[in-house]
Amino acid sequence: MRLILFGSPGVGKGTQAKIFSKNFNIPHISTGDILRKAVKDQTELGKKAGELMAQGELVPDYLMIALIKDVLTSDECKNGFILDGFPRTTIQAEALDQLFTQIGIDNTILINITAKENEIIKRLNNRRACKECGNIFNLQDIEGLKKCPACNAENSFYLRNDDKEEVIKNRLDIFNSTTKPVLGYYTAKGRVITVNGFDTIENVTKMIVESLKEKNLYH
Image 1 (cartoon, rainbow, N blue to C red):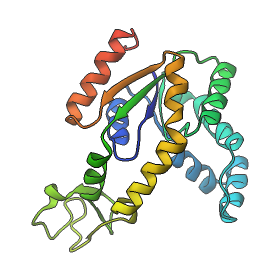
Image 2: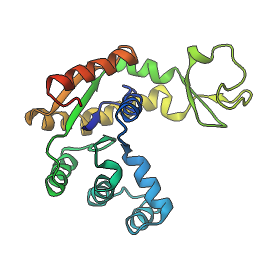
Image 3: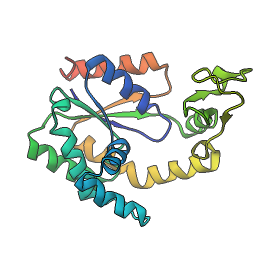
């Protein structure tokens, strides 16, 4: 099973990635995570990326593709993978397809998780993080609590900058202008499954599974 998770910030991509990774024993590949790991491990690619990031520059597409290739051709991905956070542009989608052809992958499916923007803003704005352990909670789950359920830190909940309404709206604008066209690229190739991300977590998982079964990709 080879999946690309797609959708705007706050639709639940990370949650579904964890579920499918656990259920199918395939790695959840977050491009942000592999980039940070490569920089930390000081690999050749990581050194190049680190130098660019230190100068405040974006990591170029060719370098991200090279990092992704290293992961996809490793033993951990031999039974499949869940790619999250890439591609973000149609140019990246084309480069990723070229990589798939190069390494013999031809059955990837893009899972498009959707939600209305006002629902996304409300969901993200209702999140709080623990400044000690970094875990994120919904306000309703920690209502009345003075200690973090994960690490017992007192009075540690705060609203992250990424979850402030004005920042969320800006992220959604960037997604709509830059990333959303990627959906059209994959739709034209007939490789898209679309599900409503504002159902329950269990129902979203169920809808994805049922759609994969219809395409004979659930195994």
